[in-house]
Amino acid sequence: MNKVVVGITGPIASGKYIVIKELEKLGFKTFSLGDRAREEADRRALPHERSVLQDMGNNLREKFGDAILIQLTEKLFHPNDTKITVDGIRNPGEIKYLKETYDSFIIGVDAPIDKRRILVEKRGGDAAPKTDQEFKKVEQRDRGIGEGSHGQQVDECLRFADLVVENKGNEEEFRRAVRQTCKLLKLKKNI
Image (cartoon, rainbow, N blue to C red; front, top):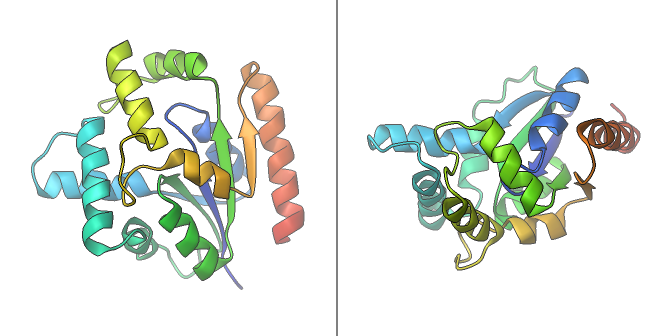
């Protein structure tokens, strides 16, 4: 049986986690590209601050090619894993690789900046920006402002997505939109 691989892209705190949870209900196993950056940071004894992890991903893509985080991640795929979600896509080269290798379906997630700032505060975590200034800096970098071709390019990734789910309303409205996206995915990929 062929693998069905769904890629997830979107800016920080846009609601990607909810999409992942809905896909897991359909039997998808999730792999995070950010985990590869964290592993590299651990090898170098660096903290898991967001800017460090962004630098790590950028450095790996520049040194080994834009698909390196996917290539490292796919080594973790088990032969019996037929439904896979790849989270944390930040560069169009990652989408290109997934589409060429697995004929992947890419889901983009976006939300207004004010909503995402609130969600970041609620979520917390070791890599989360702590101040408005930090958030704005992460936001700009994430979107691709000031980044090179091997860097963070979420705006460009959203343009390459097969479908973008907007997280504008309340959580239940967003969950309904995500479930509709999953129904479309089931039809397109026959899962």
